[in-house]
Amino acid sequence: DGAKGLEPQTRKLFEVCRLRGLPLFTFVNKLDRPALAPYEIMDQIAEEFGLETHPILWPIGDGERFKGVLDRTENVVHLYTKAAQRGQKAQVETVPISNTDRLEELIDDDELFGKLMEDAELLDELIEPLDMERVLKGDQSPLFFGSAMTNFGVQLFLDKFCNMGAKPMGRVVRSVDEEEEDEKLIGPEHEEFTGFIFKTQANLDPKHRDRLAYVRVISGKYEKGMKVSHSRSKLNKKYNLAQAQALFGSDRSSVEEAYPGDVIGINNPGNFAIGDTLFTGTNRVAFPGIPSFSPEKFAYIRSPNPSDYKSFRKGIDQLLDEGAVQALRQRNDDGGGPLMLAAVGQLQFEVVQARLQNEYKVESLMEPLSYSMARWVDGGWDAVDKADADGKLFGIMIVQDRWQRPVLLFRNDWKAASLAEEVQYLQLKPWSQPPDFND
Image (cartoon, rainbow, N blue to C red; front, side, top):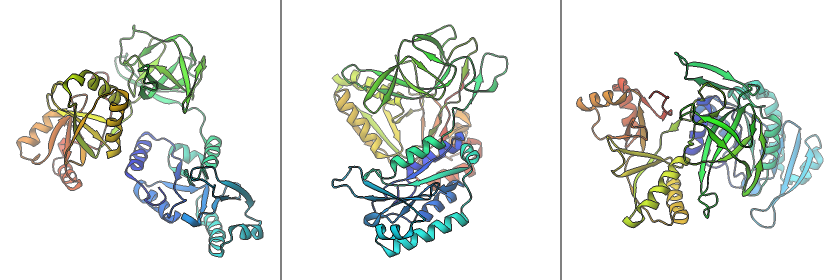
């Protein structure tokens, strides 16, 4: 956000990408509103994540004085004129930065024109050159500025992203059928099909209660009607991928074939979850799962109408499968006790309630809790019991996640940090990885 800088959701995404070594392309939005200086945003990213940024699109002004952006790769300035109605596409004129007379005339602001020429020279002199090898390793991030509301700079960003993006890359995969677990890199040239489920979604068409799993093809080739194995099922159990879809917005199209790098949507009978692997061949394999990061909002949720419980339970289960929120329960609760939802922001709770109402026709009540942070205990339940017996967990709520692993809820950062330092055998972590096969 151009005005707020790094927001909590952005920080979570940065943490995910850094943890998984993914390339980061940074787009700073809302330049049509008063914004922080671009240098300040670069400093925030560098200080918080140790990540070097390389500006590709550089802003000219902000708020009412936002004139456009400089494309530093082409040395061309894109100047825009606001559309008559908010949200419509802006009118754009491009001028080489070397054509200073025309630029000064069109910008029509001596201060902004002078700042543009000064920034262009300063960036060329002081900023490290773009190194795509470092970008792909996650050590350098191309930086873009623009305004999604006025639809300015977005297409430029997408074009640059397509040109700079990496070809399909391999993934480390874990084989679990051998006496010792073996890790190896599976590249797109691998003959057997492998795919990674990174998202699930329910009720794309509420009339049909359909559910889709989004699969990124890692290797091999998808063909309509092929049979695959599932990383969490028995090896001899096969799933028929009778059809796949390509989705763009509300449009869908049938897919007959798909190759590494493609994303396809397949029907989800309820067996597929985020982080699962689909594969062909005789060896069971699994790509590393997607970590769950520390939520900051917690609330009990329940249905006020007992007659709606079945629909309420179905809706909650499907929304949890999507990863919209996380579920926590009291220790040793096998599902009969109160359900606690955990989210990064309040909006996620509101989305859950709205979707329960609109898609499943059930009402829900939320009872907020006063905790603001969660930490997973890698030391296990024995470590929790020891710390509790020693009186170290006063004022801390002990719960379990969907895999019955211990989670501690804190009311403030200070308490979490002091406990992590004082009771190191708890091995507190701000995220959790899905459990291994043998867990």
